[in-house]
Image 1 (cartoon, rainbow, N blue to C red):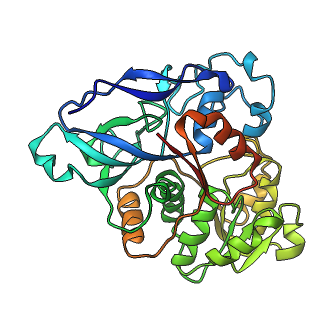
Image 2 (cartoon, rainbow, N blue to C red):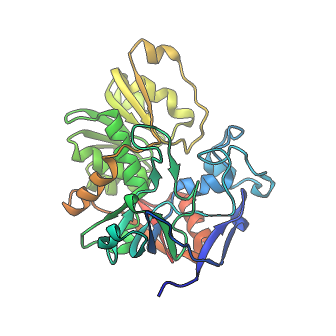
Length: 358
């Protein structure tokens, strides 16, 4: 029997941790083409913090951490603070979902009932011929609840011996990383530099780039170097390292940079002629210095990635089932302790992902 109510962490607006309210809400009711999923595990990501803070607004110039530790109670609702303009608060966030399908609206989807699944949270609502996209946790309710509903087309059964929490580390980090490497066309034998390599997306990128046969150079805090070496990074440099002195100008084919901020101009110096820089974030700050000569005189390509291509998520599921990647679970928290989880997440002392258990 499907229950009529559920526990959920509801984000009531832009602001601090007081905008996260754990309460009873009506359980979702599925419509044609949808499925109902019991959430088993939900990962913690930068994007949920950013959405709560309104960081995506063009009025924000600082890093996520700078805003998070400022007087967040003074933040007004940002009309452009979400991924698609204003976030529809109150909202159940939660990008990553490992769950169990408990109900379907269409008989054609009956095969999904009882399956453990991962949910693709980037929805190309007008098909993969259009870059238009909406996102679970920013445009519609997500996984920070006991149940969620989504389109059957966005649900992918996965057969493996991983725990629910381990699977809960996967969708956002590995999907984002695979999409970046796919769109930047990383090929075997190329040299790739990964900034922020110890985070969820960064550590996924180290694994996925190595899987493609690339030479991986990682940038991360000193305490995390051993773990990144285990993941396949051939050279690991500290965050304060002089990268130009260590590597030399025009030394890498691809930079995967979700850090941005003051180090962006250095990334451009490191790229070879015809190199590429791909990004899907800017945790150190969205405003960067760019000497246009570094770009056009070396035929550099800048690649922005938000909309996931069709092959990306099925590829991730296949890599899991074939044992080609492994999870990096930094720890788990009860869903009701999300503020504690996000505070520890922002300290950046971990490698991999934290996961919430409803």
